[in-house]
Length: 94
Image (cartoon, rainbow, N blue to C red; front, side):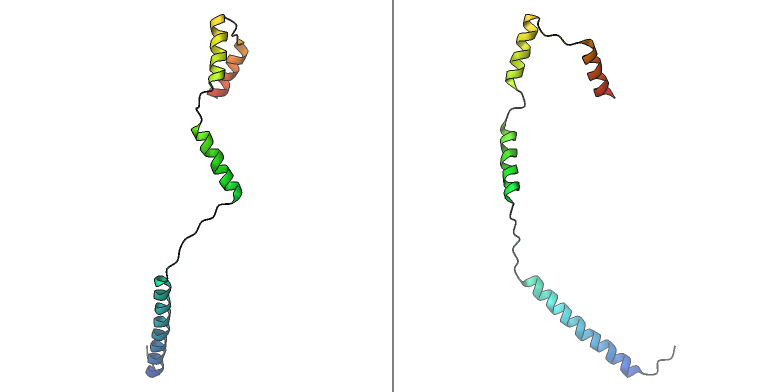
């Protein structure tokens, strides 16, 4: 390949170097400025967070239901139909 105008090519490369230096300087300046990240939650998110904390603090066992079923079982009044048991097994299994 024959290059006829070597000076214009050299000028082109040197002008690109000036532009690159300018971008490099602005990028360095942007990196050096101190920025603080900030987070603000909406009222809905704050409310949800409070409800979630309350739920996590609660026991997973509902003692009132446990007591009710214990009494029914011990007195012999707890009856579940075979159809309900079969339906539950099928729903759980399949």
